[in-house]
Amino acid sequence: MAWEGFFSAVFFGGLIVGIMLVFLYEGYPILRIYRSSGWLTIAGFLIVSAIIYMTVVADWIVPYDPFTLNVGPLLGPPSPEFPLGTTSLGQDLLSRTIAGGAIMLQVAFVSVIICFSIGVPLGLFASYRGGIVDNTVSLIMNAIFAFPGLILAIAIAAILGPGVINMALAIAVVYIPSYFRVVRSRVITVKELPYVEASVALGGSEGAIVSRYVLPNVIPSAIVVMSINFADAILVAAGLTFVGLGLPIDVPDWGWDLTFGSHQLITGAWWVITFPGLMIVILALGFALIGEGLNEILTPKLEKGV
Figure 1: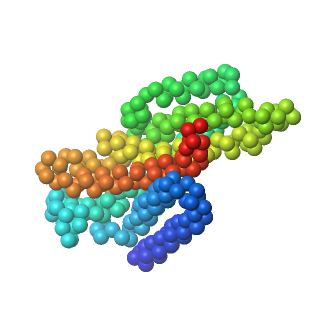
Figure 2: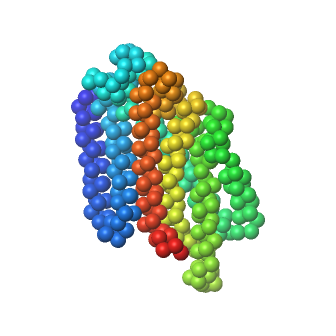
Figure 3: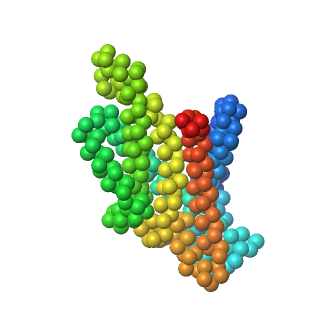
Protein backbone atom coordinates (compact mmCIF):
# COMPACT_ATOMS: atom_id res chain seq x y z
CA MET A 1 0.00 0.00 0.00
CA ALA A 2 2.92 2.35 0.72
CA TRP A 3 4.37 1.87 -2.76
CA GLU A 4 0.93 2.21 -4.29
CA GLY A 5 0.45 5.52 -2.46
CA PHE A 6 3.92 6.66 -3.48
CA PHE A 7 3.30 6.06 -7.16
CA SER A 8 -0.14 7.71 -6.87
CA ALA A 9 1.46 10.78 -5.34
CA VAL A 10 4.14 10.96 -8.04
CA PHE A 11 1.63 10.42 -10.84
CA PHE A 12 -0.92 12.99 -9.72
CA GLY A 13 1.80 15.44 -8.74
CA GLY A 14 3.41 15.16 -12.17
CA LEU A 15 0.03 15.43 -13.86
CA ILE A 16 -0.89 18.62 -12.01
CA VAL A 17 2.55 20.18 -12.56
CA GLY A 18 2.36 19.31 -16.26
CA ILE A 19 -1.09 20.86 -16.60
CA MET A 20 0.06 24.02 -14.83
CA LEU A 21 3.19 24.29 -17.04
CA VAL A 22 1.07 23.94 -20.19
CA PHE A 23 -1.38 26.47 -18.82
CA LEU A 24 1.43 28.94 -18.07
CA TYR A 25 3.04 28.42 -21.48
CA GLU A 26 -0.19 28.71 -23.42
CA GLY A 27 -1.48 31.51 -21.22
CA TYR A 28 1.58 33.75 -21.43
CA PRO A 29 0.06 35.96 -24.17
CA ILE A 30 -3.04 36.28 -21.99
CA LEU A 31 -0.87 37.39 -19.08
CA ARG A 32 0.75 40.08 -21.24
CA ILE A 33 -2.63 41.33 -22.46
CA TYR A 34 -4.70 41.11 -19.31
CA ARG A 35 -1.89 41.35 -16.72
CA SER A 36 -3.60 41.53 -13.31
CA SER A 37 -6.59 39.47 -14.49
CA GLY A 38 -4.31 36.77 -15.86
CA TRP A 39 -2.25 36.64 -12.69
CA LEU A 40 -5.39 36.40 -10.57
CA THR A 41 -6.48 33.37 -12.60
CA ILE A 42 -3.03 31.76 -12.36
CA ALA A 43 -2.90 32.33 -8.60
CA GLY A 44 -6.34 30.80 -8.16
CA PHE A 45 -5.43 27.74 -10.24
CA LEU A 46 -2.24 27.24 -8.22
CA ILE A 47 -4.10 27.40 -4.91
CA VAL A 48 -6.87 25.03 -6.02
CA SER A 49 -4.43 22.63 -7.69
CA ALA A 50 -2.26 22.46 -4.56
CA ILE A 51 -5.24 21.63 -2.35
CA ILE A 52 -6.58 19.05 -4.82
CA TYR A 53 -3.15 17.41 -4.98
CA MET A 54 -2.88 17.38 -1.18
CA THR A 55 -6.30 15.74 -0.98
CA VAL A 56 -5.62 13.13 -3.65
CA VAL A 57 -2.42 11.89 -1.97
CA ALA A 58 -3.74 12.34 1.59
CA ASP A 59 -3.67 8.60 2.38
CA TRP A 60 0.07 8.54 1.70
CA ILE A 61 1.20 11.77 3.36
CA VAL A 62 -0.90 11.90 6.56
CA PRO A 63 1.27 11.20 9.63
CA TYR A 64 -1.61 9.47 11.48
CA ASP A 65 -4.91 7.86 10.59
CA PRO A 66 -7.43 10.74 10.73
CA PHE A 67 -10.07 8.32 12.08
CA THR A 68 -7.98 7.01 14.98
CA LEU A 69 -8.70 8.30 18.48
CA ASN A 70 -6.17 9.01 21.21
CA VAL A 71 -3.09 9.16 19.01
CA GLY A 72 -2.00 12.09 21.16
CA PRO A 73 -3.05 14.09 24.21
CA LEU A 74 -6.59 15.42 24.34
CA LEU A 75 -6.67 19.02 23.02
CA GLY A 76 -2.91 19.08 22.81
CA PRO A 77 -1.52 22.39 21.47
CA PRO A 78 0.71 22.52 18.37
CA SER A 79 4.00 20.75 19.05
CA PRO A 80 6.85 19.15 17.06
CA GLU A 81 5.06 15.78 17.20
CA PHE A 82 1.65 17.26 16.33
CA PRO A 83 2.33 20.44 14.31
CA LEU A 84 -1.33 21.56 14.29
CA GLY A 85 -2.24 20.10 17.68
CA THR A 86 -4.88 17.50 18.51
CA THR A 87 -8.65 17.47 18.89
CA SER A 88 -10.76 16.82 21.98
CA LEU A 89 -10.72 13.11 21.02
CA GLY A 90 -6.95 12.97 20.70
CA GLN A 91 -6.97 12.91 16.87
CA ASP A 92 -4.11 14.46 14.94
CA LEU A 93 -5.43 17.74 13.51
CA LEU A 94 -2.80 17.85 10.73
CA SER A 95 -4.00 14.48 9.41
CA ARG A 96 -7.63 15.59 9.59
CA THR A 97 -6.81 18.88 7.87
CA ILE A 98 -5.03 17.10 5.00
CA ALA A 99 -7.78 14.50 4.54
CA GLY A 100 -10.72 16.76 5.36
CA GLY A 101 -11.01 18.41 1.96
CA ALA A 102 -11.88 15.25 0.01
CA ILE A 103 -15.59 15.18 0.77
CA MET A 104 -15.94 18.95 0.46
CA LEU A 105 -14.34 18.93 -3.00
CA GLN A 106 -16.58 16.04 -4.06
CA VAL A 107 -19.67 17.92 -2.92
CA ALA A 108 -18.54 21.10 -4.70
CA PHE A 109 -17.75 19.36 -8.01
CA VAL A 110 -20.95 17.30 -8.05
CA SER A 111 -23.14 20.29 -7.17
CA VAL A 112 -21.53 22.51 -9.81
CA ILE A 113 -21.90 19.82 -12.48
CA ILE A 114 -25.59 19.46 -11.60
CA CYS A 115 -26.10 23.24 -11.64
CA PHE A 116 -24.35 23.65 -14.97
CA SER A 117 -26.09 20.67 -16.59
CA ILE A 118 -29.56 21.93 -15.62
CA GLY A 119 -29.24 25.71 -15.44
CA VAL A 120 -27.49 26.32 -18.78
CA PRO A 121 -29.77 24.21 -21.04
CA LEU A 122 -32.84 25.47 -19.18
CA GLY A 123 -31.87 29.11 -19.61
CA LEU A 124 -30.75 28.54 -23.18
CA PHE A 125 -33.88 26.95 -24.61
CA ALA A 126 -36.49 28.62 -22.40
CA SER A 127 -35.24 32.13 -23.17
CA TYR A 128 -34.73 31.39 -26.87
CA ARG A 129 -38.22 29.93 -27.17
CA GLY A 130 -39.75 32.82 -25.21
CA GLY A 131 -43.45 33.20 -24.57
CA ILE A 132 -45.21 31.14 -21.92
CA VAL A 133 -42.31 28.71 -21.58
CA ASP A 134 -39.87 31.49 -20.69
CA ASN A 135 -42.35 33.17 -18.36
CA THR A 136 -43.13 29.97 -16.47
CA VAL A 137 -39.52 28.91 -16.01
CA SER A 138 -38.48 32.46 -15.06
CA LEU A 139 -41.22 32.56 -12.43
CA ILE A 140 -40.00 29.32 -10.87
CA MET A 141 -36.36 30.38 -10.93
CA ASN A 142 -37.17 33.78 -9.42
CA ALA A 143 -39.16 32.10 -6.66
CA ILE A 144 -36.17 29.91 -5.77
CA PHE A 145 -33.79 32.86 -6.06
CA ALA A 146 -35.91 34.85 -3.59
CA PHE A 147 -35.05 32.49 -0.72
CA PRO A 148 -31.80 33.06 1.23
CA GLY A 149 -29.37 30.52 -0.23
CA LEU A 150 -28.05 28.97 2.98
CA ILE A 151 -31.52 28.72 4.55
CA LEU A 152 -32.91 26.98 1.48
CA ALA A 153 -29.93 24.58 1.37
CA ILE A 154 -30.42 23.77 5.07
CA ALA A 155 -34.11 23.04 4.49
CA ILE A 156 -33.44 20.75 1.52
CA ALA A 157 -30.56 18.97 3.29
CA ALA A 158 -32.76 18.39 6.33
CA ILE A 159 -35.34 16.70 4.09
CA LEU A 160 -32.86 14.60 2.09
CA GLY A 161 -30.61 13.61 4.99
CA PRO A 162 -26.79 13.36 5.19
CA GLY A 163 -24.59 12.23 2.33
CA VAL A 164 -22.45 13.61 -0.49
CA ILE A 165 -25.14 13.38 -3.18
CA ASN A 166 -27.81 14.86 -0.94
CA MET A 167 -25.57 17.79 0.01
CA ALA A 168 -24.74 18.34 -3.66
CA LEU A 169 -28.43 18.31 -4.60
CA ALA A 170 -29.27 20.78 -1.82
CA ILE A 171 -26.56 23.17 -3.03
CA ALA A 172 -27.47 22.67 -6.70
CA VAL A 173 -31.11 23.67 -6.18
CA VAL A 174 -29.92 26.94 -4.63
CA TYR A 175 -27.60 27.93 -7.49
CA ILE A 176 -29.43 26.69 -10.60
CA PRO A 177 -31.28 30.04 -10.84
CA SER A 178 -27.92 31.88 -11.02
CA TYR A 179 -26.99 30.00 -14.21
CA PHE A 180 -30.48 30.44 -15.61
CA ARG A 181 -30.53 34.22 -15.07
CA VAL A 182 -27.07 34.81 -16.55
CA VAL A 183 -27.71 32.56 -19.57
CA ARG A 184 -31.14 34.07 -20.14
CA SER A 185 -29.80 37.62 -20.21
CA ARG A 186 -27.14 36.62 -22.75
CA VAL A 187 -29.57 34.70 -24.96
CA ILE A 188 -32.05 37.60 -25.07
CA THR A 189 -29.25 39.84 -26.33
CA VAL A 190 -27.69 37.37 -28.77
CA LYS A 191 -30.88 36.21 -30.48
CA GLU A 192 -31.56 39.78 -31.63
CA LEU A 193 -28.19 40.06 -33.40
CA PRO A 194 -28.31 40.37 -37.21
CA TYR A 195 -26.54 37.09 -38.02
CA VAL A 196 -28.95 35.13 -35.82
CA GLU A 197 -31.96 36.81 -37.41
CA ALA A 198 -30.47 36.12 -40.85
CA SER A 199 -30.11 32.44 -39.97
CA VAL A 200 -33.76 32.33 -38.89
CA ALA A 201 -34.82 34.04 -42.13
CA LEU A 202 -32.89 31.47 -44.16
CA GLY A 203 -34.85 28.66 -42.52
CA GLY A 204 -32.28 27.37 -40.03
CA SER A 205 -33.63 24.94 -37.45
CA GLU A 206 -33.94 26.08 -33.85
CA GLY A 207 -31.49 23.48 -32.59
CA ALA A 208 -28.86 24.38 -35.17
CA ILE A 209 -29.17 28.11 -34.50
CA VAL A 210 -28.91 27.63 -30.73
CA SER A 211 -25.94 25.26 -30.90
CA ARG A 212 -23.97 27.13 -33.60
CA TYR A 213 -24.67 30.79 -32.88
CA VAL A 214 -26.21 31.26 -29.44
CA LEU A 215 -24.39 28.70 -27.29
CA PRO A 216 -20.83 29.93 -28.08
CA ASN A 217 -21.82 33.38 -26.85
CA VAL A 218 -23.30 31.96 -23.65
CA ILE A 219 -20.52 29.58 -22.56
CA PRO A 220 -18.00 32.27 -21.40
CA SER A 221 -20.52 33.78 -18.99
CA ALA A 222 -21.54 30.32 -17.77
CA ILE A 223 -17.89 29.41 -17.09
CA VAL A 224 -17.45 32.54 -14.98
CA VAL A 225 -20.57 31.65 -12.97
CA MET A 226 -19.26 28.10 -12.58
CA SER A 227 -15.92 29.21 -11.11
CA ILE A 228 -17.65 31.53 -8.64
CA ASN A 229 -20.16 28.79 -7.86
CA PHE A 230 -17.31 26.55 -6.70
CA ALA A 231 -16.40 29.08 -3.99
CA ASP A 232 -20.02 29.40 -2.89
CA ALA A 233 -20.48 25.61 -2.85
CA ILE A 234 -17.44 25.18 -0.60
CA LEU A 235 -18.80 27.68 1.92
CA VAL A 236 -22.34 26.27 1.84
CA ALA A 237 -21.05 22.69 2.22
CA ALA A 238 -19.03 23.75 5.26
CA GLY A 239 -22.09 25.51 6.65
CA LEU A 240 -24.31 22.45 6.21
CA THR A 241 -21.83 20.22 8.00
CA PHE A 242 -21.34 22.86 10.70
CA VAL A 243 -25.05 22.72 11.59
CA GLY A 244 -25.07 18.92 11.49
CA LEU A 245 -26.83 18.41 8.14
CA GLY A 246 -23.90 17.38 6.00
CA LEU A 247 -21.96 14.19 6.58
CA PRO A 248 -21.81 11.42 9.19
CA ILE A 249 -19.91 12.54 12.25
CA ASP A 250 -17.13 9.95 11.85
CA VAL A 251 -16.01 11.35 8.45
CA PRO A 252 -12.93 13.64 8.45
CA ASP A 253 -14.29 16.95 7.26
CA TRP A 254 -13.35 20.60 7.74
CA GLY A 255 -16.96 21.47 8.55
CA TRP A 256 -17.10 18.98 11.42
CA ASP A 257 -13.78 20.26 12.76
CA LEU A 258 -15.25 23.76 12.75
CA THR A 259 -18.16 22.46 14.81
CA PHE A 260 -15.90 20.70 17.30
CA GLY A 261 -13.55 23.68 17.42
CA SER A 262 -16.35 26.14 18.14
CA HIS A 263 -17.20 24.11 21.26
CA GLN A 264 -13.58 24.09 22.43
CA LEU A 265 -12.71 27.69 21.61
CA ILE A 266 -13.85 29.01 24.98
CA THR A 267 -11.37 26.66 26.67
CA GLY A 268 -8.49 28.28 24.81
CA ALA A 269 -8.05 25.50 22.24
CA TRP A 270 -7.93 27.90 19.29
CA TRP A 271 -6.11 25.52 16.94
CA VAL A 272 -9.04 23.09 16.53
CA ILE A 273 -11.15 25.67 14.68
CA THR A 274 -8.38 27.82 13.18
CA PHE A 275 -6.63 25.48 10.76
CA PRO A 276 -9.73 23.83 9.19
CA GLY A 277 -11.26 27.30 8.91
CA LEU A 278 -8.15 28.58 7.13
CA MET A 279 -8.30 25.71 4.65
CA ILE A 280 -11.93 26.51 3.82
CA VAL A 281 -11.08 30.19 3.34
CA ILE A 282 -8.01 29.43 1.20
CA LEU A 283 -9.90 26.98 -1.05
CA ALA A 284 -12.84 29.37 -1.48
CA LEU A 285 -10.37 32.20 -2.16
CA GLY A 286 -8.69 30.13 -4.88
CA PHE A 287 -11.96 29.57 -6.72
CA ALA A 288 -12.94 33.21 -6.21
CA LEU A 289 -9.64 34.38 -7.77
CA ILE A 290 -10.24 32.10 -10.75
CA GLY A 291 -13.74 33.50 -11.17
CA GLU A 292 -12.61 37.11 -10.87
CA GLY A 293 -9.80 36.65 -13.39
CA LEU A 294 -11.94 34.74 -15.88
CA ASN A 295 -14.67 37.34 -15.54
CA GLU A 296 -12.34 40.05 -16.81
CA ILE A 297 -10.70 37.82 -19.44
CA LEU A 298 -13.83 36.24 -20.93
CA THR A 299 -16.02 39.35 -20.71
CA PRO A 300 -13.60 42.17 -21.63
CA LYS A 301 -16.39 44.67 -22.23
CA LEU A 302 -16.77 44.94 -18.47
CA GLU A 303 -13.29 46.44 -18.26
CA LYS A 304 -14.33 49.29 -20.54
CA GLY A 305 -17.52 49.95 -18.67
CA VAL A 306 -19.66 48.97 -21.66
